[in-house]
Image (cartoon, rainbow, N blue to C red; front, side, top):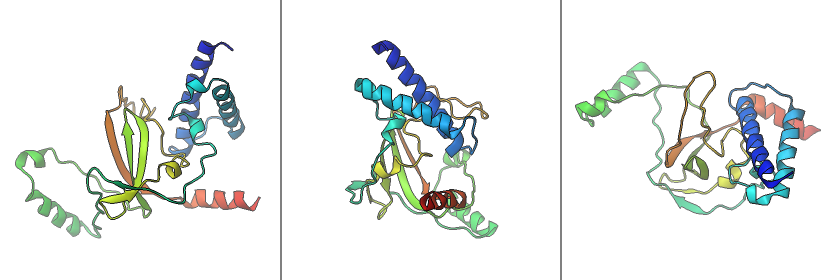
Length: 204
């Protein structure tokens, strides 16, 4: 295979693999078998070994064989990463809204949007993307300084190494160009279904 052909095939394979991983690990859907996906991964790995100049930090192969680190360096959060207060009733939510209303201007209140969801208890993390590429992941720590767990987070399939251009087939939303800097915060947790699957694998 010629160099230019290899480059095009590598790019196509990455898109295919990322698409099917997103379906499986985020949307809980599957369009191809596990063996078919493994074949795509193997082809990509072999091509990147033959043409290492085309290996990119957001390639699916960069997850493979990554050993989680046991010691972590400290990193300072660009903005304090504070924990959320719990709300147990509608009254708690109304009291919270009244408190923040006193801190905001009328224009800020007009632009205020928020949503509620069930609380997932897990490990609070911060993901940093530059030009759509995953650069670093850090724990909350004390809210000001956390630990760099980037390599460990790369083993989590649901965390994209590149922000997808199409956010979702069903939503119809498109992100034509990722922002220069994007910081996302959330919780890392494991579902009961995935926990059972991992335990079953360990018993084999």
